[in-house]
Amino acid sequence: MARESCPTVKKILLLDSEGKRVAVKYYSDDWPTNSAKLAFEKSVFTKTLKSNARVEAEIAMFENNIVIYKFFQDLHFFVTGGDDENELILATVLQGFFDAVALLLREALENLDLILLCLDEIVDGGYVTCFLNSQTLHICTLSNISMFLFPRFQ
Image (cartoon, rainbow, N blue to C red; front, side):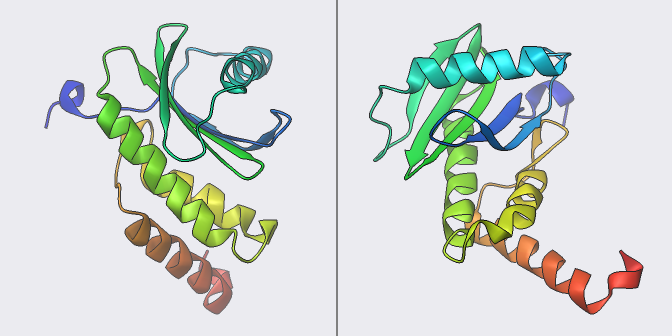
């Protein structure tokens, strides 16, 4: 499959209710410095703060990027792609990540390492690798169990 035909994600953000980072992953060099990344995060958080994206994901254009976002309790989920990306694919990535995090957070925020692992399983280097939350959660859980069973091989 040609690289141009693969769906790509520029970033996945998980922010708290104040717009601060919980977990973020950038797959694009469009924001080369940490200050540029923080400024983008603050801007997109401020722009979407007053929307009602608690039931269904919302779509917005922001700085020539498609931003798909959804809120859950105190967490704000964002998936961003280029302006030529398919919104349905980005929304599916968001929903998969959202579902996996919701399942992981039943315990507590102690599962932050698993949340970061889910980010890596859903998108690899900006390319979408899987959509299904149960598949992602299964991979993340197996990886976590193997770290405890075989720590010297990690």
